[in-house]
Length: 277
Image (cartoon, rainbow, N blue to C red; front, top):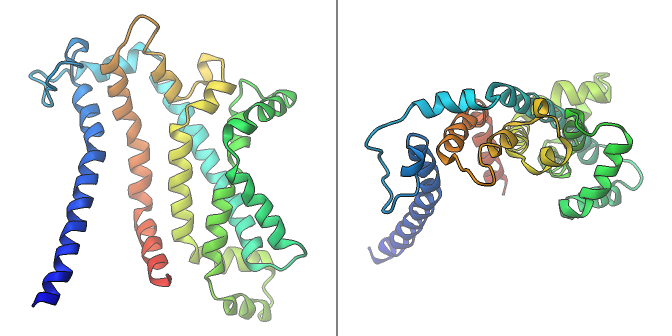
C-alpha cells in the first residue's frame, strides 16, 4: 500500500505541474481572445475584465477593411504553403540520402550541414541579403521561399526517422528490380508520414508567423505578409490593440487547421518515437 502511494504522489505532482504550465501558456491566448472584442479604452483596464460587458464584433469587420487584410492573408498562405511543400520535398530527399545511401564523406557532410543549424540567423542575415540582392529577388516572395525551403532541422528530423526503418524493405525492393527513387517514393515515403506531418506542421507554423524575414526583404505593400500587415495597425503615436488581436485570432485559423489535419500522423509519430526509445 505504501509503495503504491509512493508512486501515486509523484505522478499526481507531475500532473499538477503540467496543469499549471498549461494554464500559464493558455492565459495569453485567453487575453488575446478577450481583447479582440473590446474597445481600445477597455484593453488595459485594471483589474483585467476577462469577459467584456459588450462584445464588439465590429472589430473583426474593421480589421478586414482598415488594411488590405485579405491580400496579406493570401500572401502569407502562398509563401507558407510553397515553403512547406518545398521543405517536405528537399528535406525528405536529403534525409533519405543521409539515412539510407552510402557515399564518401557522408557523415562529415551531414555534420557540416547540421552545423549550419547552430549558427544564429543574425550572423548570416547580412550575407544572405546581399546574395538575394545580387539575384534581383529583393521585394519578391521568391526571396522568402528560396531561403526557407532548405532546412537543416528538417533534414535532421527526416534522417533520424528514416534511419529507424528496416533496411530489409529496401533490399527486397532492389532484388525485385526497383530503382532508388522508386524505393524512396513507393516504400519509404508512405512509412514516413509521421515525420512528414511533424515537419509540415513546424514548417508551416514557422513561416506563417515569421516577421523578421518579410520585414527585411519586402517593401511593397502588395507583397506584405500578415504579420507585417498587422504590425502596421500600430503607428508611432497610435495603437489599435483590439484590431491587432482580432487579426491575430483570424490568423490562427490556418495554423490550427494544419495541426488538426496532420495531428493523427503527428501523434502517431510521437508515440512511435517513444516506443523506439
